Length: 483
Image (tube, rainbow, N blue to C red; front, side, top):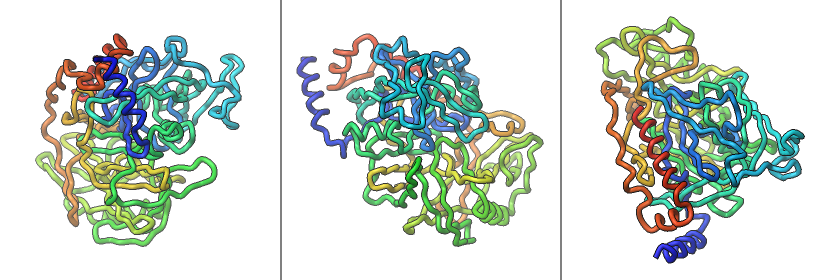
């Protein structure tokens, strides 16, 4: 019976249309915003043989998927918001039987990379916008374990190229992406590009960013017929998810202004240069009349903050809307961040003044399902609460994350804001301060993992290792969701 199920399952997967099939990470399509790790969205990915789990930051602003690898100074644990500690795996080319170095003459190595004589492999170094932040190592081929976007999942193993990150610097040491970075850019080395080149999915993917800190990711997703879209501005060298804004509306203050911005999930907050920054900041500040300005006793990256009284439970701010190239409206649901202060809270306009590049960070993506359609070369979006997750019994999608609290002002670039306050599409957007900080209930036990027709096929050929893996996935999600 197990053999019959396996043949049926394999035949069904083989005949699935790449244009309609959605894939996601094995275990769950769920993502987590973790404030103690740079306030980015993370996912649990499974790589290698035997399979190991890694907690990686999701970054549409870069291409390479890399993991800490064969390194001595890599983080072995992550301290989450509540003080819980999560043990982290380190990838090794010697312990994964499916790992092999990428040859220097491989097309994946490319002209910009060099050859490592020591490792007889293609060497890489990726430098990021954050100060002194980089990863250096060699490229390797291995297996990424994905699953169908269904419950239960069918396992889909995909050969990919990833970075074996031997040396990390800057924020990657302790602040963010300490267990790896999952590049989602347009280059042929990114996982969405590999999936499309192998005919496994459409050349598109979506990410959803929920207000409660949870989200989802789906490879092959081209969105819905009624979604709003705007075209990408494509460069011949290193194309990015660059789009054009033609108008800014802050409350009833409307300004015709054209500028371009890169949609970057790997940036916590939004960075804009002038004149766009001043247009938004000045209009926003002029319409805040109920709360006094707040000056943090410590340096922070935001210029406009406002104090909330000790008894205040809500506040109202002007709406922020962009008109995109093509005429579609993009409503920024969460243009602010709530931070702790002595004796209460304050909120800030969560835009950082930039000297050069414009980046639409993950805070401006919250409340939407964002579709990165690389076939039609458009960005699509719909307002979404991001509740539609799938998992193989590893915890569901109803538990809150990033609910930690602290007293005193935050350090310059490290914040621990509460769950994003709710807002509505009215002439002014209300924010409600969170008051319930009790820990969530634990997820269901892993007794129902791998139920259904796909279970026999998975267990028949992966056996022991995937039994261990599913328990590991459940434990990871339990720790993260409990924080």
